[in-house]
Length: 117
Image 1 (cartoon, rainbow, N blue to C red):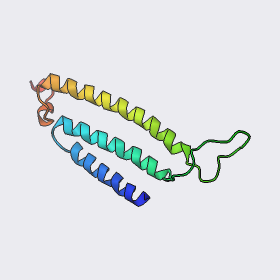
Image 2 (image 1 turned 90 degrees about the vertical axis):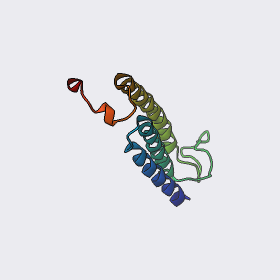
Image 3 (image 1 turned 135 degrees about the vertical axis):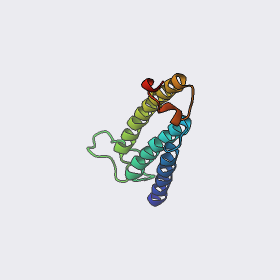
Image 4 (image 1 turned 45 degrees about the vertical axis):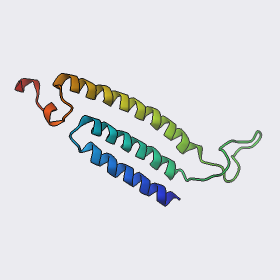
């Protein structure tokens, strides 16, 4: 099952890089979202996909029971989702400001500095 999800991560990264190489800012933003989701899925896949018990420790025990899921990738993914959302909002506002300043959503039209005008 991990091989299938690894291939899905590869497809997400490929599509994200392809979109980030486009000239339109919305496609760049969608590529950023795809790469962010690919990283989250890669962390989740690296944490072993087990349909086992929840990672809860029984009262009086030191370790979780055998076959319990690993809680570390789950915590990392929750943190990465929050950071990815913050990055998405920051990039969206930055691209919106660039669109307002230049009047175009094309990257080639945004490459001119203030001195060129």
